Length: 256
Image (cartoon, rainbow, N blue to C red):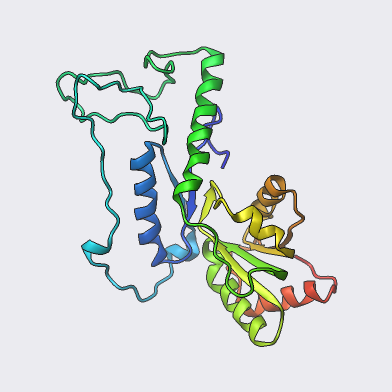
């Protein structure tokens, strides 16, 4: 989320499983091409070393990853932005009449000239953030499994998906009033996420870190989030999550 120097906002996605890596890679490429922005796709060692059955999709089922190359020399402006997506025009490298300056240094808005101006830098950062925020209108809304509102929502992301969903199913089968939501889009969040969180009294987020998503959700939506944290280089087991969630719901003290 904040890993690049100089504050350069970009979309962040996270695969849920080994097979999900294919779909999320396609989605990352779709967003990158449509909005002309780098996209960060998160995975981890657990997903990288996992295996599962996967049906090879038909070409006709795959999304159309359209390049949207500029073709009209008269209308071409390399730093002109589409007013809807804020994407810039994309010329085939070396195409006659569409030559322009590229490189890693920040450019002046509109002209493409290298700029070290502080006000221009702030403007460009805000433009990038506005572009990322707008992507929320082009991704799926968050879908809750189980009751759409109630006492407890178990919310997972990344490779915690398998253990968390299995824990949800076990708790639900035992009569525990709990719902489940898995996030694949971390920046921006699905546009309905705030409304979903408001409908539950308690949100529980299991993470294989010290609580990164927990902090982000609390900061953005100003709602207390209960975290289950594990930083041992090992994944969660579903029985482990069942025990910890049960302890939380019965208000017993639990080390997380």
